[in-house]
Amino acid sequence: MIKIRKATPKDVPALVELNIILQDEHDQMAAKDLVLKKTILKKKTNRETFLKKSFMKTIRSKEGILILAEDGNKAIGYIEGSIRQPKTLIKKIASIWDIFVKKEYRGMGIGSMLKDAVFKIFKEKGARYIELNLSIINTKAHSIYKKWGFFDMDIMMMKKL
Image (cartoon, rainbow, N blue to C red; front, side, top):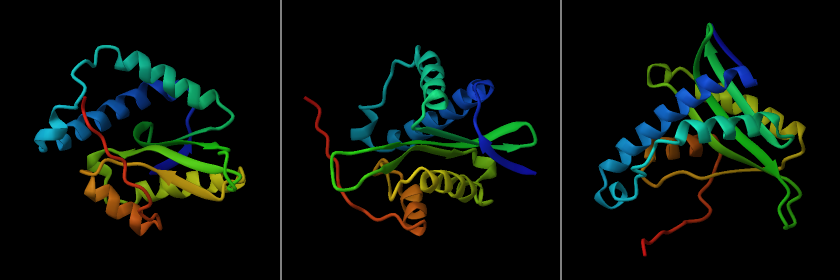
């Protein structure tokens, strides 16, 4: 049975493992594009330490939100984000930083369950809008986000110097 709940400090090792899978999948997508292939970070020696600190910061933060999906006691996905107050007319904006579901659990509605859980928290905390960024090569995620009601707003461009 799939369970969706707020992550705790005890979940950090499982979250790190899930994020490494997410990063590796993204790197494999990027490797198909010769331009993006050159931008993949080669040095991953300290990423576990960085991820542990980052997840702990989100869990302990008043603004951070980290939701875990489990099958039994096995972590199978997560969604991470926060709420911020920009210097605009919009009082509070929610941001989704990452959403990930293990391959073998995709297509089962778990991403939607994570989305629903985080949207509920965002609303409770007073957010009126939600933003997220994704890689241009992640067309599958882009189509899912459009189904969820997101719309294209900006294009970020990059150039190596």
